Length: 324
Image (cartoon, rainbow, N blue to C red; front, side, top):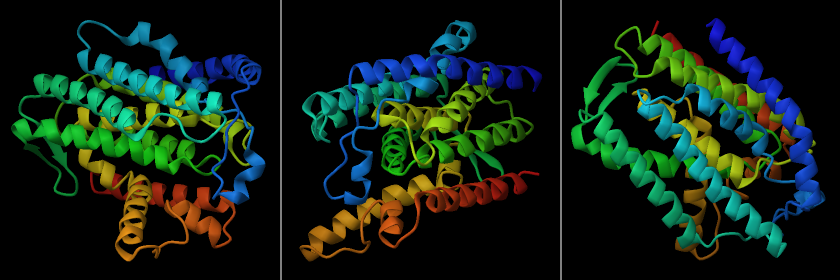
């Protein structure tokens, strides 16, 4: 626990130190966000620096050399895959900045990039966990899924990274929900490890601590009114971390509970698109994802963040109570 706190504080300090440099680079490169034309109430945010995810990514880069060893293959996969998604997000952000419009990589390019990384992660994890062991929430038992862990890991990777990306539409929203998710995930890892050993638990805890420290610093600049956005660089990175840490610690199914607000973002978007196409123009929500629907209903960004965080905390407490 003491080591975890030290890494958390060190990551916060590192993020605080590098943040002025990140801001300087983003301003120098004129890395401003271009807001979609149909989100007209956000038009005042146009020009706000994006790719601020580097504020919490850089501390992990610094720590990686310390925690990565030959006997920690899962931690290596977690960090490398997250960096891979961050690079993919960076390319998307970079193209948007250069073209001065909210259109980066093409859909097929994103699918190829995300799918390629997800396949590699799934194969490596299957080799490390051929039994396909997963912890079943509420029943508090472990089940072996065998080879089906391959497609399951792939689906979780794709679904989670895109869900976190969709949630990043309101100041402080994706960062706050992710921060709480990591906190509760760490607690769940500790509790589940009492039932059966969680591989590389100490390294996973360090990754969680460093991520939370960097995220907390980032939120100082990202809460309403945001001085910087994380961009796809940050959201895809966080999505990959959330997915891999959850699956590799046998807690993949907790994504549906603890990550309920990410699920809401994805499901509301899918429902909206499907219903719009089926009815040729009608909508279920005023706008999707769901947080934009709430904005259309008159909710402030701060109130939306509070709601999402409160539900995540409630979900986290339910998960913990079932394990005590």
